[in-house]
Image (cartoon, rainbow over all chains, first blue to last red; front, side):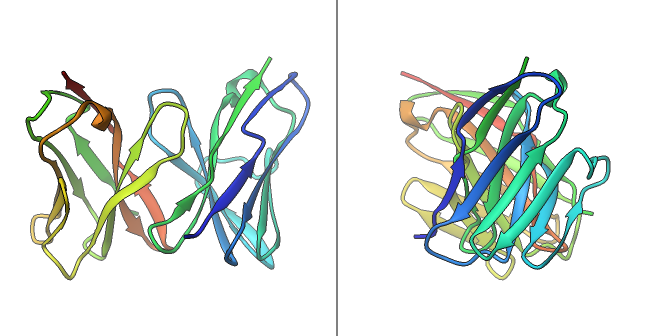
Length: 112
Length: 111
């Protein structure tokens, strides 16, 4: 079945630094990738949609300059959290549509 | 856009009993409704889904029913087992194939 590989699984970074999260579709081509954020004991909230070959679309209230999304190829989408702050600490997870939507394994980001 | 409400927020059942989780949606154009199980710190896993052209779907101990007129759908788990304990999310799909998730239900199966 379809697999999305997400890295890193956990990252701790200092305030003010940037962190890049990668999602790769391993056995299929993903022209679209959805990026979600999940705070503890809460639901998944869609942040943005990356599209191969075009600009990402962001949900209302999500800062596009802070959460940079790039869909470099049909198999790679990246989310970069820039100038991270402690309130950005969360579980970030990507998902590719199709066949029930395939999720990456998630990235636990802790900003200290 | 789509709005999905999910109830209850927590559900405790005795092993062997049934569990029912209910969701309502707002967008009558929605046509795909998946259910996910998420264990702590892990990715959501699809357990069953239903499209708007059917009213019920079953897979072993898990079933989903859909009432398009009332715009609600439900997850039914029979003969619950301790390993069914997890957080369950329903979702609807809005324009752009985006999934909109319910708030989640913490299911605890007591042995």
